[in-house]
Length: 403
Image (tube, rainbow, N blue to C red; front, side, top):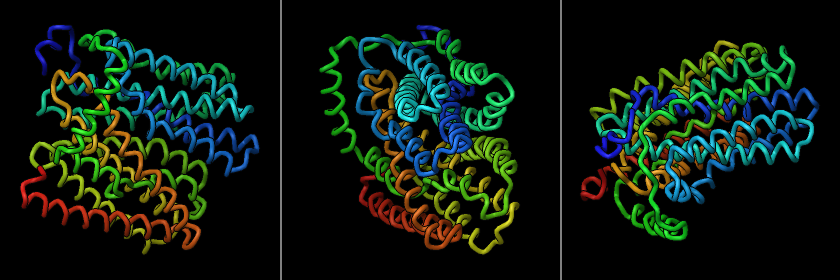
């Protein structure tokens, strides 16, 4: 930990830092679980619902382009709090405009943009406060915060909106996004770099080029953009529960309680291993084991029990992969890095790419072979990517150009 950062105030324990990532899961659950149910109940066609949520997910790819603002003029604490408040306001607006699909889409997009910038701000901020030996734990707990936020919201959101006056439920859901704000107010924060915004952006793109030339960052990007451990089936299974004769109640229960448990367990079980082995190696092993699990599902009958097993297993694997991704990203950021938030945003944006294209490929495969087609496509492509990367990584390490 930087001594300058320590002198600026209180540094919370690692688990509390991780729970500051709750807004990502909270907002994601409302956008991906709750609003689609409400729109379907309002007779909005499924293709339109899918296009709305797809637009809402776009900031996961593009928000890093404005991330240099997070390292300019104001502290990362200021940006983190401001974007959390903006996200809460826009989530409330989205919930209130469910019958105006154009306004709803804009609110979801801008709100998710704010959420992603909040994630970048706290990621860069916390990385500079955390010593290298604890960054694996921080990566795990950031994923726990995301998973808890998503799982709990997936369970309670529809009840809040249906059992309370709708506007009251929307207010409560939006206020939940502000839960980390008191912690952010109280903790240590370094002042921002005072250089001009133009200099910040020029520095960003120059530094990104320099970063990609580094072997560790190059391998990080290569692992993140290939489907080595994306486990995009987590976003597909909820829509095909009927293939397994699973009731809506079971789908909701597994999507809430089950995913929360799998997310927390997946994050925490891989964290001790990160202390002893290379994160790159662990990432590939997570991909191989997860792919083997996915392929094994093809041989099982389409029953509610198998559906539950599939959802839990895929989320367990994805949570483990996300934890390793967080750790790799955090370790590339040193202490007192003036562009820490920018660098965090750039690297994490790469992780969103395979989730998107693998989800599209899984969907196309479903059209040919139903659930078995999706399992085969996802598992086979993941396994092939892991094998190719393992061979390339071994060659690179033999030549001394990879960690």
